[in-house]
Structure formats: C-alpha cells, structure tokens
Image (cartoon, rainbow, N blue to C red; front, side):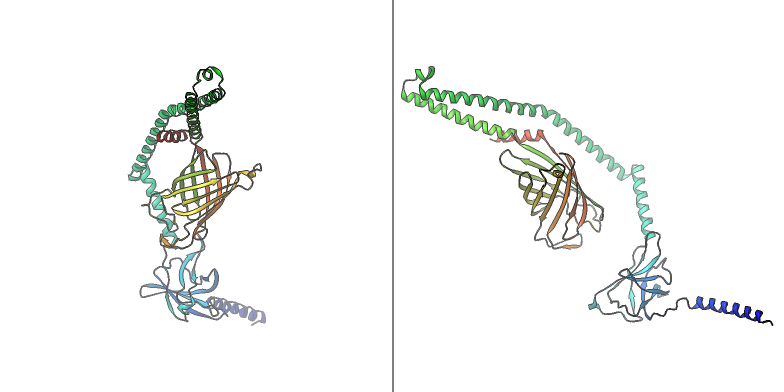
Length: 430
C-alpha cells in the first residue's frame, strides 16, 4: 500500500473519530458546576442546553429534561461559584414573543439557606405566551362578535349612547330656556348699577344743599328740627344705595370655571378623569374648588397595577396671584396642599409653562388592590398651555410609591350662565 493511501485512510478515520467526539462530548465543559433539579407542570418549548440566567446573567445551562412522578424535571447545571438561595423563584420565560425560552432565576434571601447539589425545588408554572395570545385573541373576537351581532354588550352600549344623547339634548334645551333670563338679569344688574350711581350723585347734591341752606328745599325748610330729620333721611338713603351698589357690583363680577383633567399612564395602561367647578369671587385673591377625582366605576375588576381609588371628593380653598396658586383641602379624597408656579409669567411664550405639585395623604397606611401603601401621595408635573382653554403636560403620579409616568390634558373654560346663576342665587338668598 502506497504511503499516500495510508495517509488518506488515516485522515478519514481521524475526521470520523473527531466528529463522534464532538457529538458525544458536545456538553462537555471545563467549568466546574453542580446540578439543581427544578420541577414544573409544563416546560413546553424549553430546549436542552438552554441558558440558565440569574438577574439577567447566564450562570449555567439546562443539562437534561425528564419526567418524574408525572411532572417535568429540568436538570440545571449551575456554575460552581454561583450561590442560589432556597426561596429563589424559578420560571420558564421567553426572550420575546417569537424568541427562545430559557430558565430564569430570581434570587431569594440568605435567611432561607443555600441550595445544595442535587436538591429539588418547585418552579413557578406561568401561563405560556402562546396560550396568553390565544386567550387574548379569543376575548377580542368575542368582544367584536358581541358588538357586531348586537349582543348584550352591544345593547348596553347602544342604550348608554342613547341616554347620553338624550341627556345632552335636555341640557341644551335647559340652557336655551334659561339663557334669555340670565342674560336679561346680567343686563339689568348693569342698568341698576348705573342708576344707583346717578341716584348717589343726586343724594350728595341734595345733602350739600341742605347743609348750606341753598336751593328751593333749603330755603323752604327753615325749621332746624325738620332740616335735621330730612338730612338724616337723605343720609340713610345714601348709605342704603351704597350698600346696594356694592352688593350688585359683587354679584356681577362672579367668575365660574369648569376644569376637566384627563390622565393616561402608559405603563399600567390606565386612564382617569377629574371634573371640578372653580369659583372666583370678586373680592381679594381667593377661589374655591369642588369636584370629583378619579371618576370611574368602583365595581369594575381591577388590573394588577390599578391602584387608583375611584370617585374621591376634591374640595379646596386657595389663594392666587400672577405667578403662583396655593390651595389646601381634600385633594383626591385626602387632606393635603397643592402649589402651582408660573416663574416666567412675564415672559412671552415661557409664560405658558406651569409647574405643579400635589402633596397629600400624609398618614397613608392601607392596602390598595393587594399592595401596601404607607408613604404620602406626591404627584408633580409640568404643563404647557396652548390657549386659555387647553393645555397638555407630563406628570409623575404617586412618586413615592408607584411613580407612574402620566400624560395630562386639561380643558378649562368660563361658564357665564352659571356665573349669573350664582349671582341670582346670592341675591335671592340675601
């Protein structure tokens, strides 16, 4: 046999042996490790040699997957220098919607002790991603079918929309009926104020004539007692007209605003609304606010991250000037204070920015939707006002607890009809 032939046969045999070695020793590693057995009800899609990650760091590989007593057992090879505590949490997760699965470990506490080689632990059986997607699609399909086929939900939705349209029509009709009376009332207040000014001027002239004995009345009234009686009567009339003028002036300068806030928190996918009435009297720099915060149905099923307490009173008394607004009272159902700052009120464009902070519920210590809240409720944000009616902003809600980022939209407008109504009510009460 020629040397070339021997060399060729030796090379082929060597390659075959090398290939078998790679196949049989593919799991061989020079890193020292120990085994932990994790039991699951279902490990669908988890392959052998899948990564084992602790806090996002790969600390081993899945050596084998077997069945023992009707349950799946994942044999995990853990690097010898990695310590895992007994109360650690083991789950099978995916790297993405279409990614591969791996064994995830959430570290426990040292007080629980350390897992030893060969120990058995129970894994957490979570719903597989494909099952969750299937159930979600099924729920969406049922929802669409219910609406399209006018099922129970569709009937309720149609009934609700019908009632909303009917309510809106009734409100429009009521406002249309009341508006002429309110408009005439405001006009009459202006006319009355003008006439009072005229009468007071005449009263001043009459008092001057009486005191100096001038004019027809001054010359006719020679009796000193009668003169004093007339002067006292005119003085009382003047004081009465002054009080009426002040009262009418205050009633005509009432300002009432509707204030609506909409918050959307992307992470928990939650939306909430606040609606309030703000009343600004004519005297001083004070205002009053009364409304409802976190408007919603308390009977709805709460999501895992829904910690909003529904339908809370928001009643405040406040002071304001050009660059700041300070208020105190019930803020979203709990005692607290709120501060709005406009540091650039005298600068073009920058005067549109408002910085706001709310600090309330200082003694909070209660469980909301299975979660303990024992820190005050602090929310803050910055808003940009596009015009006198509409603004948007970015907020942090309950920063010391959930710290959810929220997008805020605000609509505020003056209601002259309600302003007139408050004036008429005050006049009637007086």
